[in-house]
Length: 211
Image (tube, helix red, strand yellow):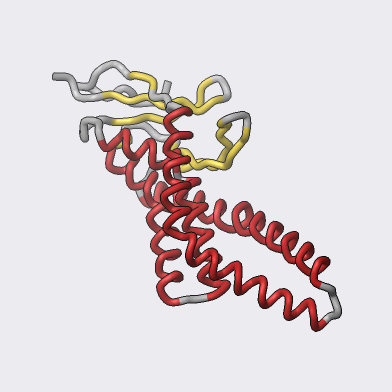
């Protein structure tokens, strides 16, 4: 058990668990909402990409069908690199930087959901106030979202399309963060949390002030 936990004047710790069903439903909602709101810039960006690629393919002597097949493959590879090689690391790094700034002892690792291991940052600390938890959780969604919206406002064509994809994918991928954020929003603001490793897994507990 971590040192100084539970704090004096608080109830006995309760285990905090997520609802994978609720995360899934929220992910579907976010995917739909941001998919609808970004469909126009993504469509414009896709048209611009196809036009540029076909012009390039014509210059190097590729016929239409091989050019289209190659263009789809390149777009798929580009999307994979964008999401797994750029957006996801930046998303987790924002969690890490904010947690470090708040002195929450952040730790990189992997969290399994639906039999898939996803990178995650957890604050291995005790007596974490609700507001620090909420700030760490919401930071990547807000920061990447604002940057993407800014790019959509000033850019066009392929750049706007990429910004739309980033906004859409990052928002949908933030479902777990937003799920926890909304749960914490409804809790007593004096609630305190602790994250620690037990039996090779990260466990989360919380306590509230005694009445």
